[in-house]
Length: 119
Image (cartoon, rainbow, N blue to C red; front, top):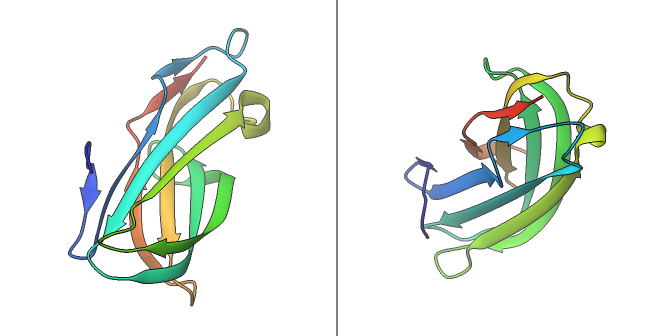
């Protein structure tokens, strides 16, 4: 795994948008990529991506999916294309936040992107 931005004793990962500045009049979507690995086996975990303000307040959920397995031998790599109109964000600076929840919906890992600007 490369570009690790967040880690704890069990998980490591990163989350990034394809660029830093998006112009509503020019850009149709935000391309998001992530990779998460674990030192233990986790099956049927839920992955959710949110748009937050700079203080970490969740504004909207922009993606969610169930991941069959994350383990030392099975990294999870995800890619999402989210329309700027679907985000419904006012111009400003935002953070993308990924939350990973175990099968009992307990938060086990979170990672945030670098700030992005929507103009």
